[in-house]
Structures are given as structure tokens and as C-alpha cells.
Length: 281
Image (cartoon, rainbow, N blue to C red; front, side):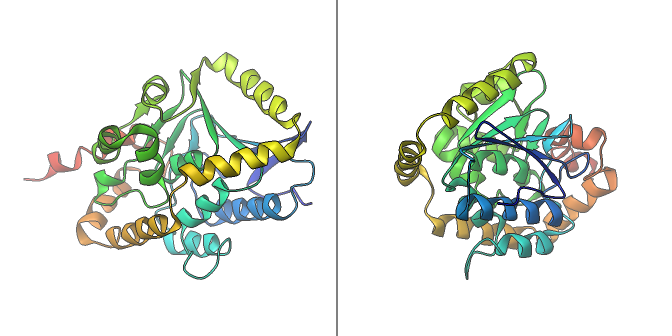
């Protein structure tokens, strides 16, 4: 079993694989990171070996993953397609496969998890977040698009219809406390307690007989995961929307102001997507 990836640091301890995203200051879901995530999921699906639990976190202090690399959508989609069969050429279908791996997955979130980065966290079985530092958001509606990699499917099931519409159509940021109250995440914890809590839970689960854990996860997934047809539909709609002139205009405006670069705009992206209309006559 190979657990070495250029953009993901890994450490295996007591049945827990700690997988730290390390793809630059924003951890954009681009070609390199998607390629490595596909390789990781392939390994977990075919030969998990001693791995019983995977904890995904970030090496970047301010970002779990900012969002997808909007300058390389076709390229990262091609990498994601390697994880599926015909008709599954999308990040959404890859993340659907991540949700179904035969081990428990935990997202440990510090900093911002927006767009595809939030959808990566949602594809994990559990999300625990730093109360002081974590921010969640699906900003796509603010650009003229919509979440296309599972965000709609997961958030509607977790939050309910009305709160999912608030989160997705509002395109605003949610701090960890509000995300916990809405059911977006499992728990918001003080930053100083987050690591120990996740470590204890992961190793506790890893110490149980794996057959029962896998059977329970399969049964829960059968009841709660979206039908693949709905995930494919969201992905196709996203691909169409980001090509529209109005969406391109908004993305170009954001790019001119610092989108996909560390700085104020990415830090406050939920606020920034609502300011576009104010510059127009």
C-alpha cells in the first residue's frame, strides 16, 4: 500500500491515517490535489491495509481548502474522471466515491472551507471544526453558478430545505458555531481542544472490529447519500453555468481583485461576491 503523495502529507498511527492537504496557501482543488486525492481514494477502496480511519486536515493555517481552481476546471475534472467510469467525469462523482470508501473519514477544519473545499469536507463522514478559525460557505450563487460537487445534495439533507436555500442562495460565510447549530458540521470545538478530540475519536473508532464499522457505514450511506444521477445532474449544471457570460463577468471581476490569491478578497469571499452589483451603474 502506497501512502506517499506530493500534495498530501500522510502519517499512519494506530490505524488512523492523518492526511494533511499541502497544496499551497489556499489548498485549491486543482490538478495536483485532485490527482492525489484520487490516488488516496483508490488505495482506500482497493487495499486499505491497516487504515481504519482517515483524518483530513490542512497544512495551510487559514484555509482547509478555499475552493476549486477556477482557472483549471477542465483539467481537474479530467483527473477526477479517473476515479470513476463512463459518465462520471466530475469532481462531484469523485467526492461521491470518497463518501463511500470502506473506512471512516473525518474532516478536521481550521480556516476557510468554501465551494469545492466545503464539498470535500461534506463528503467525509464527520466534520469537526475550530470555533475560532473555521469558516464554511458555498459562494457559487454569488457568481451566477451553483454548487456542483455535492454541496446541494449534502446540505439539503443536513440542513433541511429552508436552511439549505439560505446557505446556497445567500452564498455567505458561516462561522463554526452557526454551522454546528444548523447541522452543517458535527461540532465546533475550541481550537486548543480540536486536535486532541479528533485524535481520541479517530483512534477509538480504529480500535473497534472493522467489519461492524463498515457494515454500519454502508447501511447509513444507503439511507442518506444522494442518488448518483442527482450528483451527475448538479455537475452538468455547474459546468454549464460557469460558462455563461454573466458568470464569467463576475469571476473576472473577482479575479481582478485577488480571487485565488492569499489576501483580503479570499479571506472575506462571502462578502466580496455580494459587492459586484454595487460597482455597476
